[in-house]
Each structure stands twice: as C-alpha cells, then as structure tokens.
Length: 162
Image (cartoon, one colour):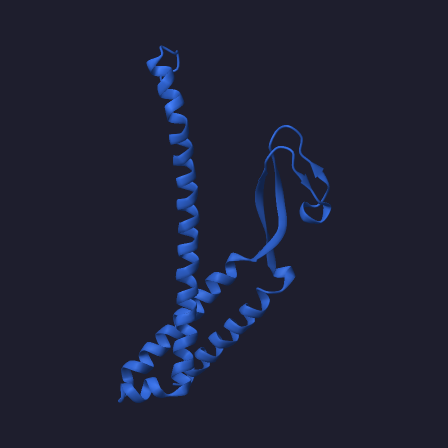
C-alpha cells in the first residue's frame, strides 16, 4: 500500500512540475503561422517585426509572436491523468458506499480535476477537427468557384478540358 501511495505522490509532483515548466518561456516552442496579406496593405513594425508595404501583388508573412508548450508536456500530462483516472476508478469500485464516496470533498475535487483534463482534451481535438474541416471547405469552395469557368471552356471548344 505504501508503494501505491508513493507512486500517487510521485505522479502529483510530476504533474505539478510539468504544469509549472510548460509555462516557462525557455520551455516553449514558437508557433510560426503563415499570414496572407491582400495587395496594398501596410503592416506596422510592432506586429510582424518590421514595416512592410505590400504593393500590387498579395503576399504573406511569417508570424512568430506566439509560443506553445513543447509536445512532451502533453504526453506527461496524459500519463499523469491516466494514473489519476485509474486511481479514482479503483477507489470508487472498492468503496462500500458509492453515495458517500461522491459526497466526499476530496473525491469531488479529484473527479472535477480529472474531468477537466478530458474536457480540455475533447474541446482541443474538436477545435483541430473544425479547423481542418474549414480548410477543406475553403478548398471545395474554391473548386466550385472555378468550375463554371472551366465548364465554359469545354462547351465553347476550348483546349483545356478540365
């Protein structure tokens, strides 16, 4: 029993340490994003690292201002929360009175903390899926916007079939 208690304390310490380290600036990685700019845009110095005046053609810039935690912290958090979930489920299964188990403040705190991890994971995953879907919708809308023009070439005897 003492080994399991020591293991639980170890996972708590690792989880807290991981949480603190992932917010430290030296433990974060830059999130580089491609920013497309239409023609005739003037960008201020503080925003993208310099005065940029875009002329007649559209252009793009790399935005390097945002940083994100290293991916390793996510995996450490998954392992720790897996242990916390396992521990909570085992404590619930061996509890003689389930109602008193869920009324205990310590168990409520553990349940809320564990569920918050899974809720954050689910919402982050759904946000990534929504971004991918919107990118795909933009590809299809561009495809369908171009199709009537291409069909016109087919019916008017143009050289390009597709």
